[in-house]
Length: 189
Image (cartoon, rainbow, N blue to C red; front, top):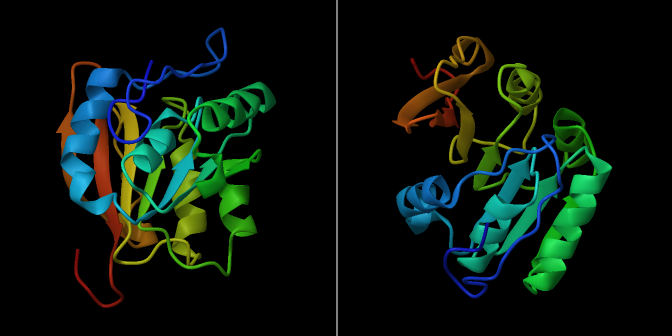
């Protein structure tokens, strides 16, 4: 696993051993960043269920102004800090060792993020708790791009009742990305 582009290009990243994290492959990461590249420079980036930190580190390497990386697992959070130090991107980042929904509550009062990325463990519906929290939070507004990486069979049927809509889906061989935004009050989905 490595940084694909930007100021930290080609630098290798570490991950924890075992099955506690499931790193996004370089090919999927490259496809994702090709799709969102116009939105990354200068953005505020939130990476939930961060794992090794590879997605936020890629965003920072490509010019994101800042990133918050949220990871509950202590060993993974330690690896994220090491990866940020190794890539010289720690000064524009913050690592929160916390549950994703709790981290959003902790950040209340800050301005909305431009991009929120989440890659929760598949099949556990952890993203629903995050969307419930985001629906009551200023961390996301109608301009925030929210990206969820999930299993190919996954559906997010609760989104509209929480004030969100899917506007794009990108499928790969084994998983997919949902592109989601908050709907404006009074706007029909």
